[in-house]
Image 1 (cartoon, rainbow over the protein chains, first blue to last red):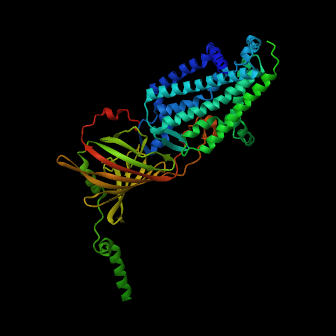
Image 2 (cartoon, each protein chain N blue to C red; image 1 turned 90 degrees about the horizontal axis):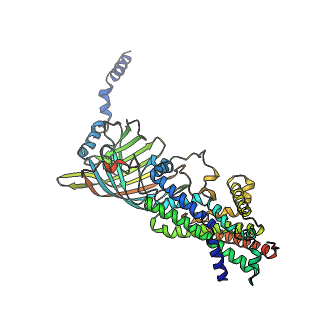
Image 3 (cartoon, rainbow over the protein chains, first blue to last red; image 1 turned 135 degrees about the vertical axis):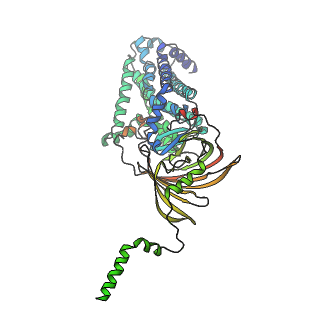
Length: 279
Length: 253
């Protein structure tokens, strides 16, 4: 199995499309950080704190690296699925499209093991991508804006002491990675249904966009559907920044996300095991 | 007929000489009403030579909508009203009561009226209404209790145009620096009451905390409720000749 995983890893990481996401975020994030550094930080701060500044004078490095690390994570995770699907959508469909499946399946390896190896590689790519974006945004932000306590504005203000932040961010990135595993798993499932890797990408993004619209619109009907959509649990990473941390809710979200992931993988495996490979 | 004439004379005397009759009705031991401008000129006078100061502050914030760990900071002040705060923590300090500005109640910059005399925790204090003349001010008025020996500000209540009310209780310590001595705040306890927040018309489910697409961060639409802030001041350093550049880029100006 390890040999298969290594084989799939080499295949995946020697394709140039694997690096599209790394290049895209590698360009966007430094650009945004530079924009913030060259004045955007102050207008951002004014917009965020104008109400508070009526009654208070504010001291401290308020919009620091931790703040922007949090902000980037919140702003980018809707976009991260796009780059994940580029690789996940190609995992099975790409073999069909290239006509390499028949060759692959002539080896004495079961379809289940091949699918499992491809799935593991998809998850590894997903984790590497999320951690790359997390590391890049947080690292660059801390370098550009320095450190300090983390200011979170939701209904009121919560300030988390700096000493707790490395641990909280690690947990948050872990939960964000899990949420993105679900996206990759869905795309992987769609990839098993077709021989064209564009289809899974579009289908996955369509599901995410429709789900986001449903959970965003405050209609009663949509709110009733909300718990059944995996997108509803994408904010699990934000919950570690609550006070007190709602561990029960986080545990439930983790179980639901793992459940979605397992369901998509099993569906892909069952479908692929019965699939008639013609190319 | 004769009694009617006597009664008319009494009424005439009362009408013609009321100011003379009034002091006779005051309680024994009562003093004349103080001149507000003079009182505040006396309060400001010892600080005429205070050009700048540096002080360390340690603050505890207990506000339901602003949950901030205790913080320490260094506060720099330079005449007439420039200040700068240095700290790594997030440090919200009440604008009208947490930063000591000796010329805040300068009679030249405020309309001051005497209200009444009260007993403030066992100390006799005169209460004045102070209305800033500066059109840019965010404070509608201050109620200032002046008392003690030497005369000092014991308590201040301020009401901002936005409706935020602050009740500030001060205690002082003497700071000796060379030959000079200054009476400066040692502890300040501020009770803040924020106005009832009106629903923000811009607020939508998109920006609410529990929406996964909100990005985890909303906009500060209102601060409501009430709570306390305690600030302890220490390590005063007066007239160190602070550089103007220190205040140049402060976000609070």
